[in-house]
Length: 365
Figure 1 (cartoon, rainbow, N blue to C red):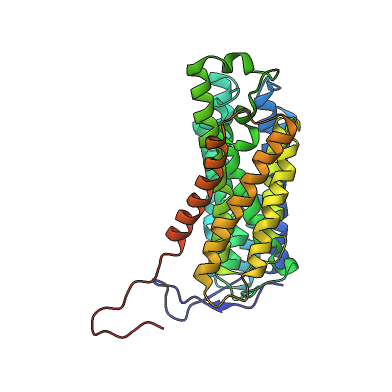
Figure 2: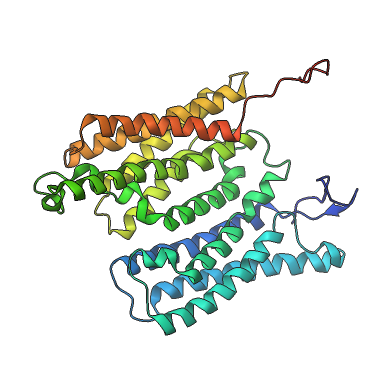
């Protein structure tokens, strides 16, 4: 059954208009179907990376597009079901409108992708991220994947401090979205980066003795840490604006991202999965222990600063234990501090300090 209908009181809505809502089961099924699309996307990224593609008709594309068919069919069924029991003008449940737009974008891009591969061949490596049809697929998937999150965000359920079970559809929705964006920036992912460990005896170490090449690899490594930091931390901070997510949320999120990125390289860097789990546990611990703080802004700042410190300290510790850090202390230690400052800046943008009241005006409470 669908959730009880609610009144849409958002700006621009018609006063008193009742809009339908989906159930927990509806949203969970959609989130799991989106996970099938993600599975196909990861397999496709692996195939592009290792040149396992020869045509558009591949097993990985089969997984990707069959998942899309399931998502499309489920969203169409929800819209049709609602239309059958409600007035025609209110057929789309709250949060699902943009998702249906995403279905259209994805479908058009999928057809275009087939034509693109026929005309220009199959992309290998970084070209896959910049293919116009792939960007269209990413955009359509983004709108679809965030549907359960939008539905939960605009609802009084699952409450300000949800249980893990109640939060699962929104959590999976955010996890797939985070992975999607990570894969869009896969070419600057720190979880795939060798630059900090280019020591003698490792592949690429000979080229690293050339000063110009060494400088380029270090810059790339530094950028990858900061980009990955913001892409991981941002979703957690967004959740904190709306909920106090249950313990395990960040651990699942970071762990999934690290694991699926590792799959692309056939687990050549399996250690990053451990790093992701450690960073997620740190975020969950900070969220749980900030629950009693009366000042939610300070709690937000604590998570934004503390999580990067633990995440990237464990990252460089892992690099040291596994291969040895080739960077000087200024670079790896500075990267950790800079990541924490980046988290603080992101928190300031999401939760800015309150503005003072106007002179003589009422003081905000």
